[in-house]
Image 1 (cartoon, one colour):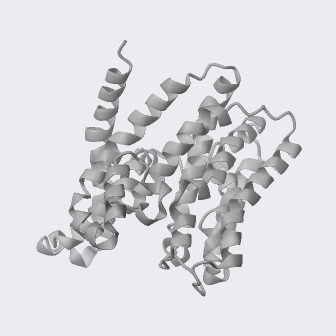
Image 2 (image 1 turned 180 degrees about the horizontal axis):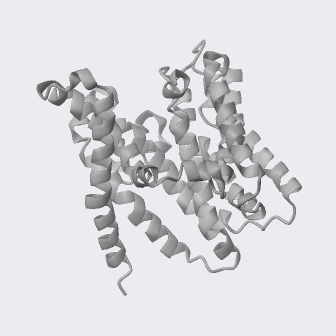
Length: 329
């Protein structure tokens, strides 16, 4: 499991691609029929993501002092202004301001903005030519990492997830570096519609996707970090999505009720885990409770529990209130 645990960063790329797929699955046909109300769509997306995003920022105010010492005054105040607006990700130097995982919401906000136009893409008539178009998007997704490797603008001999450089941060944390993954996901929804849900090929695609990703991760540093961080795994993520979107043993195994129950809180877990982890360990709470011998597993359980509480007592009630307020005539 070590190769998987040490490469958790790839889950962000999967999340972005999956986001495009889910939106395409639900809205592509409506958009092509002219039935997608852009403003209503944007309101729905805002009410879905902003309550927990705001909570994650409020829980991060304790990091303001360290942020002051980490940036120029101009960048610090830019972070203060842009982070609540989900715009910090456009400036690499402050993309991780206050809450590191929150940069993805800058990307998602932009992708939600452009989605109504992406969803209008012509419905494919034949699978083969459409797959070649998706291959082109895949190449565009690999291009930023390939250019980084070729020019090595930060002068880092062997960059990895712990490396720092302004160009590497632009590659990792900015919306424009990941937009190909989102577009690929939107297009993947059209492929999904062309393949019967009970097609025999679906579970085999999932096995191929999971297996190939594990092999690539097991190779470690032999696979350039700049490539595997995002674009390289795009088709393999697509295989997994197509498998899990079908009716087969693999989708049933991963669709058991406990996993679905926890999966509903995945957004809360993702945005809140960083600061919650710091809170658990920097306050010494686990030590005082005598739980340190069970760490990190007890921390994982507590983080999942906190995410579920946030989902049911903050996200869903806030979403309901916001939608009622925003949709009032």
